[in-house]
Length: 436
Image 1 (cartoon, rainbow, N blue to C red):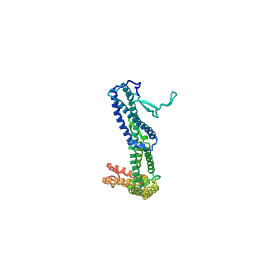
Image 2: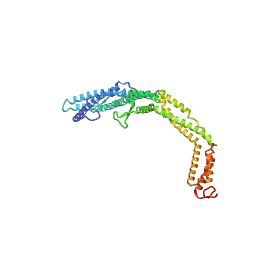
Image 3: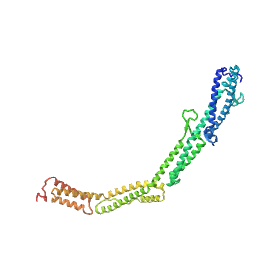
Image 4: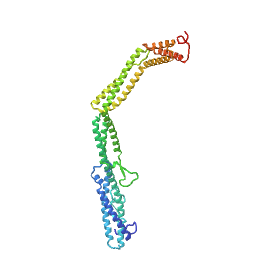
């Protein structure tokens, strides 16, 4: 250690003093950082955890680096103490002392064991290199690199462990509440899709928590372009997906719960719709018989009853309600409500179609009487032609069976005669003031 390395000239007294002051301050900073790293919650958790995967590999390397850091620090402490002792011998150090200080502080004055990962292998020119030489400044730089690597692992693991397990536990508590609600409304695995999905989410969440605990670095997303230790954030993609699935299940179960709360009202309303459809169809059947009896040559469609399948499904819904099978009642009620409204609409259309001939007859009767009243108002009630045409049309409309086509023609003839009679004075036998 007596002569400086060939890397440069010996340092001057003032240069040595400045280097010693800087390295002394750095020593204090390194010591504080190493103790802080040793006491870091993340390091303690890593040290006692059963690690797997990426975290196990990186922590094994980080542990080796941390051990090397403390070895380097001990060497750093001893070398700094030796440099201070050498500098403190006299106010004006000799050239030999400056050369030795230069070797310690700047050049390759320290001998260190070569790290296992970087030791040069044996070659044809000689054995493997088991040690290396460097100065204090180079040693500090190397320590900084190892410290950053270890801190990156520790900070990332701690960030994941601080964020994800607690959130997973909260979600698991919500899952337990959802499971309890699901069981109360009959949503169970093997009986309802939401029950099966709830089981899958439960398993996925348990697996996710176990993976986060054993391999936190698998859930670490490094910030793009960041080289700072711990630069990044926990990857919550799987947690977020589980939370969304649980929310969808919860909404589905709440829909089933809503069915339980208003099932009686909906079943009563459904029964009323089906009853109205049945009454309407009964009215249509009665009207069909009347049409066939009173209207000649009419093609009247047949009228059935309410769908037997609908009635059967309504009884099934009532049975589900009685046995509190809400998860089965929910989809059945939605289908039944729509089909019952369609059935009522069909019944009304059938009634309208069946009674159409009667409606036509009623319209013709009304039109005939309306024109008779107009004729009377104009003083033409005694007109023989109008009387004859009115009576003919009336007989057709009030006879059974009624020929609608012939009756319509008779009403049109009476209507035309009435319009002509009311449009101007025309002498006609039987008309007052006309020819006799």
